[in-house]
Every structure is written in structure tokens, then in C-alpha cells.
Amino acid sequence: MQSWNYDTIVFGAHPDDAEIGAGGMIAQKVRLGRKIMICDLTAGEMSSNGNPLQRREEALASAEVLGVSERLCLGFPDRGLRECEEQISEIVRVIREFRPRVVFTPWHGDDHLDHVQATRLVRAAVLNARLRRYGSRKPWVVERVWEYFVHEMPQNPLLLRLDEEDGVVKQKALRCYVSQFQVGEETMSTRLHGFPQRLEWRDRLAGSQVGAPWAEGFWQAEPLGFHDLWDILD
Ligand SMILES: [Zn+2]
Image (cartoon, rainbow, N blue to C red; front, side, top):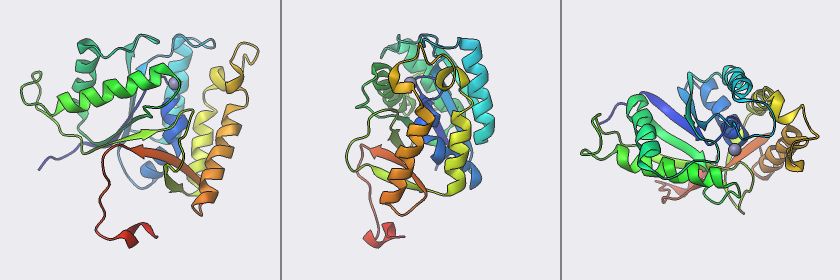
């Protein structure tokens, strides 16, 4: 039996991915006493707005709002995520060192290639982390990988109900990213204009579908098993 150190590591390609797709989940789990860590694969240096230092400061401010225990940035090149040994082994190192029970990563069908590559890398690392003969550290088995939605959301995702306060904390965390969502609107792509506001609409709409003030969607590749189908009728 493994004893995990972290309940969850939420991986993102860029600082702010974790908040966009799973900020409410993170706020909820921290509120319930879970130990959560965020790991950004890049510093987001290719963004048209802000610079890596500013983005790191924003990411740390947001981490504080969310109450996560740790936030790492692996410093892989932005727009340079590749399924290569160098990057996979670094993520394996993080998984084996921090021993998460569950891992979150962006949805594999997202239209931003960095998000897709991030997912491929994280899944490769989750696989390698469990191999006894891979690397020198003790193997670690992640129990489940969840995918969250940065931009697109497919039909009928699994929806996590969130309390009012969780959505409020997520919005507050998002607004730490001043360089991304609040200044420089003339240079940012139109999809980012008023982005926190549009995310609020998305999360409120998802919540209305499941009888909650807010909800976030997630995707699961592996089968989900239930003892009793009534378990999900809470
Ligand atoms: Zn991103």
C-alpha cells in the first residue's frame, strides 16, 4: 500500500491553466483540508503580454489565494513542449518526489497544442513513474489522471459541483493574472478579452446544469466504477 504525500498535483502548460480549468476544484479541496500542488511546465514566456518574472509573481499570488501548498515551474520552453526523454524524466522526478494520489492535466482535445503536449507528457510521465526499472528514485503509482478544460469543453463532461465560495476564490485567483486578463487588451487575442467574466458564465452555466452555484467540467479516460449507481445522486 502506497502512502501518498499530496492528494493532487495539477499540471498546466502555462501559469493560469490550472486556475482556468480547475481553480474551483482546487479551492474546494483545499477548503476540505486536502494537500494540493500546482506544477506549471513552462513560464509562459511566449505570451504576448507580461514577462516570465511578472507571470511567476502572478502565479504565486494566485497560489496563495487558492491556498495550495506548493507551486513549481519546471521552466520547459514555451511552445517547446515535446514528448522527449528530458521533459518526461523531469515530470517523473516531480511525481516521485511529491507522490500525488491523483493528477490533473489539460484536456487532450484542446485546440492549443501546448495543452495537448502537456497532457501527452504528463501521461507518459505517470506511466514511467510506476516502472521499477525507470530512473533511480522509488517508483510511484498515480491512481487516476483527470483532464480539465482550458478552452473547449466537449458535450456532457463530468461536472463537479462547487459551493459559492469556491467559485469566488477561483475568480479572485484568476484576477491575480493582471498581465494576461486586465492590461494590454490591444495586444491580447480577442478570446482573452473579458476572460474571467466569460469563465464565470461558463462555470455558472455548468453549475445550473447540476443544481449548484458553480461547476467545473472534467474528463476521464479510464472507466469509472461505482458500487451503487445511486451514489452519484447526491
Ligand atoms: Zn495555457
